[in-house]
Image (tube, rainbow, N blue to C red; front, top):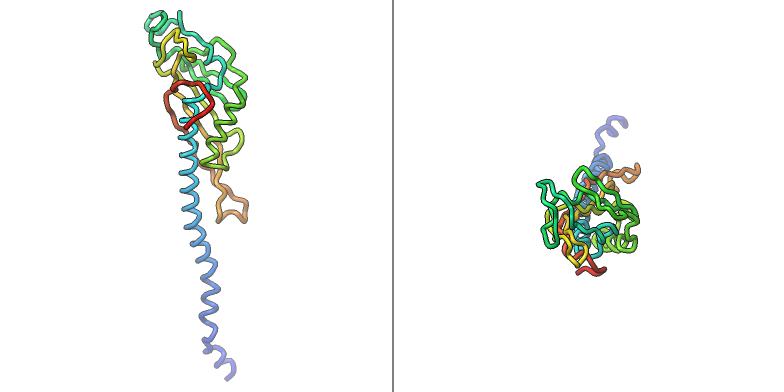
Length: 209
């Protein structure tokens, strides 16, 4: 009789069902929050990259070679030899990439500057990263790079250096998102690479709006 009454006792059914459902409900709730924070993080990185590009095109170029290079006498692919005030052809500059104090040049995209590519101006680089961190404070050290690539804009012999106005691309690479759901396991989700490009404006100064 006692066993029969016990088997029919349903007084704790609700509590037992709640205990069974609670972990799944919490997982779903934190999963929804995780997706929202992930999307917000993507937006922050995108905005930081955009503002970094805006900062880079109106402040000092990082590579000293770009500041001093003259393009008078450069021979374009069409055979034109640039004279003073001629428009600088796109192939006059390859891709100068600066990461921190080091700048390198990829000559497969055009000609590399003849001057010293490095050291980059570390103070200007740090100021660029600091500007980006106003929009995404968790940007890791060493994840930001700045690329200068020939655009076909600029005039040879322009006394206002740099003569060339390259396309400036700011990139943020190799960053991760710390997942809330996976945090007990130390899990991180790789974020996509971020980049944004603008054409260099004056390339001088240390202040950006």
